[in-house]
Amino acid sequence: MGSPYVVVCTTIRPSDHAPSVADSLSTLFPELEPPEFQENVFPVTEKELKWEFDEIDLSKFLERISELRILDTALDAMGANLYDNETVFSLSRQAALAGKVAFVLNDEISLGGTIEVTLRGDNLAAWIEESTWHEGRIEYPRSLSDDWSMHKDGEVSEWVDEKSD
Image (cartoon, rainbow, N blue to C red; front, side, top):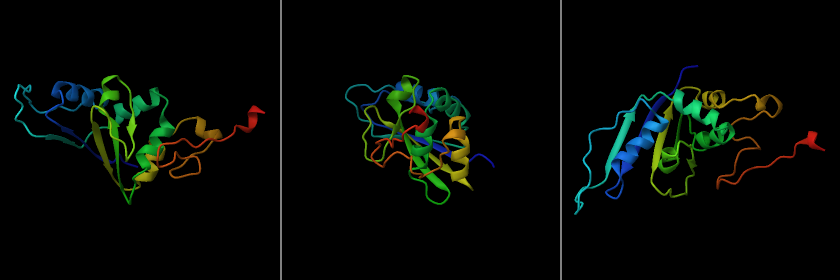
């Protein structure tokens, strides 16, 4: 199963600090090379800019979500908007600056802006499940949209560990 086609984009508003936006992108996707930009000077006359990057390698991102032990959250967030062979999910730029990964849910507004990631490819659901797999799923199997998926509003689904009795 091949890796999906990946597009990463973010919108830079006049109030954003472009070097910080560039840093947040390179924290999660180190191979990205942001375009040249100029520091804003008062009065700001610039409009919004959109930075878009195609054919991105997700290996460092996937390593990071594994290190942070958020693979189940990633499974749910990456698959929440999966239709046919395409999905889109958002990441917090502010969290990325701190070296963290925070998924921004559909109705949330993230302080500091977001990074939108689009994945396209055949058998994308299977790729997401395989890319977020961890040993805990041997005992507690998971799949996209299963009964243990987080709710659409981000609330967690809880289950009782039968062995803890």
